[in-house]
Image (cartoon, rainbow, N blue to C red):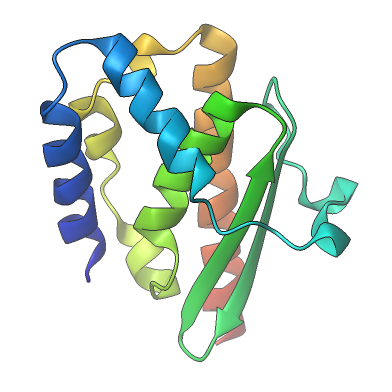
Length: 139
């Protein structure tokens, strides 16, 4: 599935909820299904700087796509990174680099996060794009 299709699917899922408490619960549920990072990758090198909570992210090249795994010590943050991994894992580096991020605004995520969590979200996206940039330049 292409990135845009996944983003549209996420926007549609979020539109089913009437209020933000339901959306927060949904985000937390998404975090429970996150493909977890291996313990050996829970290192300072893989921590995303700029997040209030600890978030570890690892990207590995698999043929011509990047597979992401992650974990967080906070349930809401774990859900946020789960949304991003669902969107960008198993995608080509150039597709990740060119991806439109407006779906974040469409689901209202940034405006309903505390300023520190919103900064963390930006840092997560930046790290995902940095992996894509590194793998793209390697090819």
